[in-house]
Structure formats: structure tokens, C-alpha cells
Image (cartoon, rainbow, N blue to C red; front, side, top):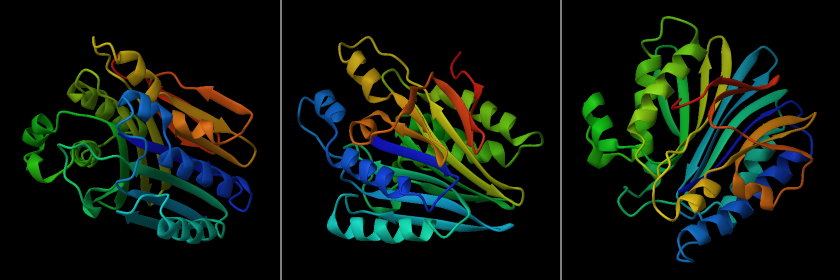
Length: 277
């Protein structure tokens, strides 16, 4: 159970960057959706945080990547995040994904299990963050990896990258095909809310998925509210976030997304497929 944030920043020097990260920190510190879902047992996403970004510096691109086991609302994390924000302001345009983790009891714990996960394939690099759940035992068999030593999200990301490494067509179509196949491994009550940042010689691409597989349990409505995803747009940025962030961030142009796979770019959100349809 985690909180997600992704954005393409057209004006990184604007005040929105500080404001949206403040809201992300607060949404991770106090998540009323999580509290309702767990009957008050959990309130915070306090098992680590991470960010991956790509900044445009003229015709070139620079990579930023950081993960920490501390809660994102910890004093040290806030200081690190301030440094990261100041770094992001140096670029002409930015692409980034951020994640605050709430680790499940059945999943490994430690800094290496904090999102986003990084994968290199061919001449490309990918970062992947996930909120939800997949059948990692079955995926581990498909990929021939040990599911006991990895979190389910890492294996899900590895599955997507494995498909992309064999892509011979347009990258967006290959991403859509990989995600469509991955939805088969989402159990009832699980979700495939993800962020995928790719960087190749042709530049960065950013994808967002929103998919929830309903359950017959009475808590289905609570899960449905918890997993909702929203887009936020202005002249300075286009962003996508988990539901909780909107409790702490005031902005005008907000809409709830339909389930599916989207590409996030400076032109806005483009829906690539309706997952599980």
C-alpha cells in the first residue's frame, strides 16, 4: 500500500514543484483512506520513499535517482527532498516519478525493496513504481526468478521490462501489450496502479496505469476509493497522483481518471488502452 506521484514539468522553476511535493509528503504522513481501509491500524506510508527523474538540459538528458528507507516525512528525508527539488529546478523540462511505501507483512523490508525499481536493458533504462498487488509466485515462475527474495512490485516491473527488451515495434504498443498481459496476474482486491519512466536515446517516456480488480468483500468500496487516480494540469505541469494528495493540494484543473494505461507528456494525458477490458 503506497502513494504515487508522477509529473512532466514544463516550468520546473515555478512554485508548483515545492507545493506538490509538500502535499505528497503530507499525504504520506497522514492518509485517511489508509486509516479507513485498515480500521485505524495504519495511517502513514512510512516504509521508505524514492524518486526517479529525467531532466532536459538543452539537447541532453540527465538522470536523478534516489531511494531511502526513512519515511518521506522524516526530518532527514525532508532535507534530502529540498535538495532534489532544487536540482530539478535547474532543468528546462523534467519528467519524474515518486513513491512512498507502506510495506505488507508478507513482503521483504529494506532499502533495496523501496520503489522506484531500476532496470537497464539494451541502450535503455526504466524505473518502475507500483501501488497494488500481483501474484509474484506465478510471475516468478514465468521469469525464472526467486519470488522469496523480491517484492511483488519488483517482479511486476521485471516482467514489463522483459517484454520491452523484446519489442520490435512502436514502444507505446509494446508497453500496452505488456500491461495487458500483466493484469492477468492481479488477484481480486489487487491493483495495478503504476508509474513507468523510460529513457532511451530518443528521450524520456512516462506511462501511468490505473487498474483495480474488484472483490466480493465488504471492503471493496474502501479499496476502490483508496486506489483512485487523478490527473492535475496547469500551464507549468501535467501530473498524476494517488487520491490522498488532493487532500493537501489546492489546484483547479483536476479529474478522476478512468481505468487504463496512459502516456503522460508535455501534450497531456493520452490513453493507450483500457486494461482488463
